[in-house]
Image 1 (spheres, rainbow, N blue to C red):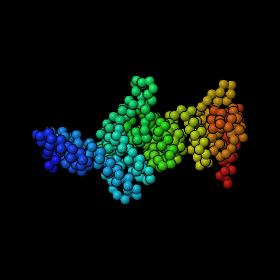
Image 2: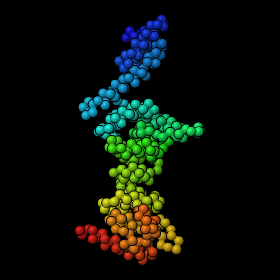
Image 3: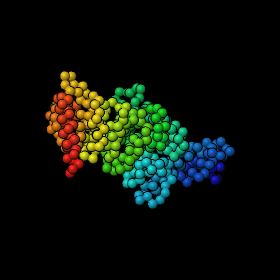
Image 4: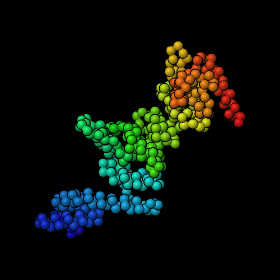
Length: 353
């Protein structure tokens, strides 16, 4: 166009006028600026197009986002970077659209969002860069007096989760801040608890937990699911209960999480513990607490029965310790055997109802 050519004029006033007019055009100038920056033979024109392009691109993005948000019922297709991937992973209902717009408006996170639709090597590189940036601002080597530590925003966390889901286990090699810590920070937890965001964030977190990107495996998945109170939490608890390599204390904690949720439908998940004689807690001069004891105790609580009714001793009557596995023990091996016999009778009675 004439204005693009004028950017290379030998006369400064003409170059300045062309710059000013192209700025006024906003997004309408994109059609000429992008190809000229890439292919124009005049280096002056290429340079000035490069200066103008960011503002025109931002104006174009704002216009497309405005159209996107106005289309509340999703009647039209929208060419926004990352939107297709976001819909697949988090849905598109209700406030999902406004949350996605927030991600696009977040300048630090926009490059990673745009890379969601790029080949994996480019996405992995963009994720690595972002994780290192977050590490640096969240945990600076030097903190000035009076400076508050940076808390990752909802946009920071959601964009990272999207990228990690896309990369799957390939994301494990990425250095920098842990995505687990991003999820557990207050801004994300607050957003997750809000009625308008939870329908979008819950499926996203569930897919992230299932993507196999965390080095801590089943334990971290259970802890995060339980902390956020995901609907799918029992599934992650069961994974811990069935994992042969995990410590007995971790499995005992998992059983207490399950009991706290309530519901007799979860009884089959605890059955795997009822034959496990691994010691969870040693009691000097007393009967040790075994995993099968914990499984039985939490099973009783699930069906609404007090463990002391079948022979457990409660170390503390405090109601706050109702679900503490170490609060219950057997006075003897004989008492344990009698308790398991009573449990079999309870189960049979339940089955005959």
